[in-house]
Image (cartoon, rainbow, N blue to C red; front, side, top):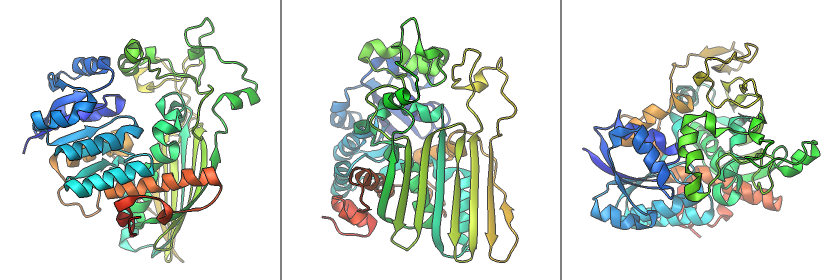
Amino acid sequence: MTRRFALIGTGSRAQMYLEALATTHADAGRLVAWADTNPGRLDWHERQTPGLGSPRRFDPDDLAAVVAEDSIDAVIVTTPDHLHARYVVAALDAGADAIVEKPLTIDEGGVRAIAEAAERTGRSVTITFNYRYSPRNSALKRVIASGEIGDVTSVHFEWVLDTAHGADYFRRWHRDKANSGGLLIHKSSHHFDLVNWWIHDTPSRVFASGGLRFYGAENARARGLGERAERGSTDDPRTDAFSLDMRADDKLKGLYFEQEANDGYLRDRDVFDEGITIEDNLALIVDYSGGPTMSYSLNAHSPWEGYTVAVNGTKGRAELTVVERGSVVTDDEGRTVVDPSARPDLVVDDRARPASESLVVQTHFSPAREIPIPVADGGHGGGDQELLGDVFHGAGDDPLGLTADWTDGVRSVVVGIAGNRSLATGEAVRIADLDLGPASRALGGESR
């Protein structure tokens, strides 16, 4: 069945959905209407993806009317995180299903609103947890589900973001916790979902520690970096390796740099600026209802990017190690290169660690063995393309439970919500003490 889609928010995150509807999944549906506060981004996507045609443009606040007038089946929400709940609820109440990027929302109020709307309308909410679909993460799921390492007793999970990707969260709207909920919500919701899914359990208590220890003006002054120049001055900070020159990347230039006159949004702000309210170093202890405990850490200024996961069980241990990018590439002028594959003129230091992934399983009193991981291309460890197939065509046989709905989004985001409260109070926070309304039932509790 061909479905009719609307989409709200056409920044870079929307591109994979737009390209899918214009090309690989054009048989599954058509983009009928789209909205963005910046019309220049709509213009850019129309030029870049001609297969979309010319969808109807609308004001996001007119979503209900558009759903009714254009018989919209599903609304794709790819706005900044703090707006997810508003448009998911509006889509459901208007009679459409919702497809929303992670995180589901950023706070208790958003969780309550989505849960109430889902119960009130009976419509579906799909949350796109692409990392579930990555073959390496699915391989670990199979190992745990097989019982080979026994009942899970603890998980150690470390994720490091490098000084290209990690720094980027401190340039754009994510730097304000009111917009993103901080990295515990925006980024870590991926990771918390993976653990919930891997061990098939629900978080019950969170203790968090962390802070802004690398980025931001105060840290820059402490390290003697001095005052930073404003963009466009003679001493242009875009020559700094920690800055981003959007003029050198066609996508960033077209979506953001050339659209600044429309709304004043600056995508490439200084990571050592004043006013950053999110953390760059985070550590959590998370207890689960079934008994396991997770130790989790996130660092946003590493020289390489990837993650390590160790799952301990009553019969043994599984270890997943992933290097997504071995080093950050800079050009001859010392500027970070966003896409090194587009710069064949650059010589990449061969001493950088290569991208790699390995899954090792060892049971008690036995030698270790490595589990083969299928090769996959594309974003999020090869997960994006398979995810898009499920989003637009529906999931077929799904023994691993790859698809996720709003209840999975709740189980993921409550770890970050509780973590933020713990950061503020210095106390451990019980998930049952959060005011989640009917969403509490998704966590095995009663609504407050």
